[in-house]
Length: 361
Image (cartoon, rainbow, N blue to C red; front, side, top):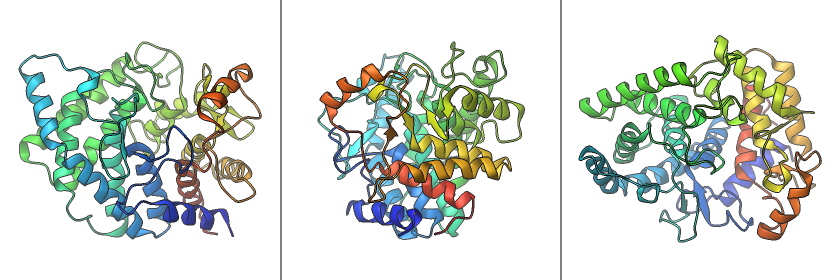
């Protein structure tokens, strides 16, 4: 079986009856939970390969989960409007159980990027297949109000770290999500105007404070470090698209600092499981090369991703052969067990990059 076919089979077979995509079926810290961010990219992968029903079910699940919290969003927005302090613990979760309720495990929960990424993926899916997913309006409007109200607030990044910072990849996710929400046409006139103001505000903030001396995007405002999540600000989110000088500089700097022999590290100070190369990040770098017309470079990353599959064809979260901090690996093995395998986001990103390169089998 090809890795495209196996990836589709893994994702379809593990999708919950609710429509949620589990992050990983067996990994101790992820088991039983679905992330909006991971799931949105998984849905993008299957949508590109014709699993319309699976992607529809995931987006409908997201809309239910977020729509069920519309009242919580309204309360939070009202509190901020009255000048009250709102803590990270008050915010919406970043992950949910497969049934769509808040988990009862401690987690680094306040992350805005997933809400933006879901809105982006929802619109991509609808445009691709020529129709809207029914019943998503309440969830879309709640997500847009939430992002419009809180995009300025520091929160955890893609990696559930550094809640004290404003992360450029998060800002890029929100920028793309609000643009998508406006384009979906379900916001009220007032909501659409506020979302458009937020989109302009994000672009202005990143242009003013989000660029390092070399002309590339920063990991967070005030830092000159890079992070592989910044790749998404170029493609697919288009904050600075392929061909833009900032986009080109960002992809080049991420590749220069973080890519090695086909794999991609998250960031240079990463100690999680010793700091390995992440399969899904090779997908993002390949995606950017493909969109910029560098197909040979993109194919090299797709080949590396495929080479990390287990004999059964499952893709892990990261690989441990060239660790940044090998002495830090054991503590994570003792804490959470072996690296998450399969990671559905890795399979989703393989499907995305395979589609970009016309690989269907």
